[in-house]
Amino acid sequence: MTVVTDLAGGPGIPQPRGGLVQMARDSWVVAKRNLRRMTRIPEIVVFGLLQPVMFVLLFSYVMGGAIKVPGGGYREFLMAGIFAQTVTFAVAGASAGIAEDMTKGLVDRFRSLPMARSAVLAGRTLADLVQSAFILLVLAIVALLVGWRAHHGVLAALGAFLLLLLLGYAFSWIGALIGLSVRSPEAATSAGLIWLFPLTFLSNAFVPVNTMPGWLQAIAYWNPFSATVQACRNLFGNPGADGAPAWPMQHPVTASTLWSLLILGLFSWLSVRKYRNATG
Image (tube, rainbow, N blue to C red; front, side, top):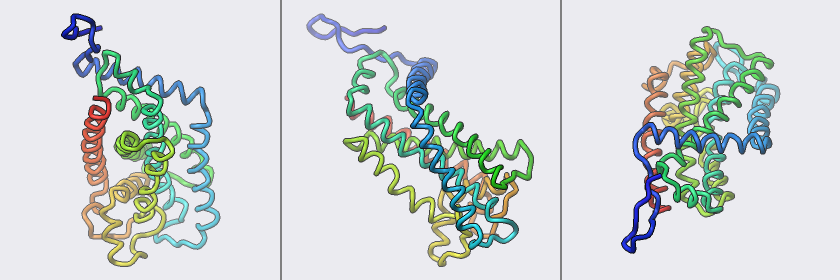
């Protein structure tokens, strides 16, 4: 441990060790702490699973008969949207968890250790990524049971799930920024969800975009959420392409990757900056 001395000659604040390797190690330590917490409080994972499973069942059996999708059945059309919604709704958990750590003083205890400043946030978002991967696995099994299929092979399906996890990881950094910006976990949960509903419903996730008014279609086609959903449908071989001339719909895999990397780069930088200012 590296310790600096203050002007009075006594020990000062431990200084973080540098280097990407050390940052990765510190992040993994924080990630393991959050993963252990999930195993000790299994309700976190259970309730995280219940919501998407209910969406699958309700949309499939209640609304599926009323919504017609050109080129296939509604259940296969639906699943890419449910997968994407599930990974992005993890934002609420990330924001609430970080807000809780801030209010309980845990972040101040981390700050007293010789560890990379960004490791606290990177570890938290990494743990959220692992949880999202597990939830996606279970949700895919449920989807298979209700009739969903991936028609383009295992490699294409794996590519789709990687795009989903990249989107979820990028959005978890938005949750980190929200958690650092509010004063309570309750406010963080609300702030983490309230903007996600228009984002997911003003997209191609649940209904074909060509059924929307013209001005809404433009918003939906350029929505980052829509790009990932469209990319997954293409990779899964599911129905949903409506021949839109918008560039993200013509090149959804590229658009989804670029959107996710842009969100990840911007909000990870903003979050780390906010964290340093909040604990400085």
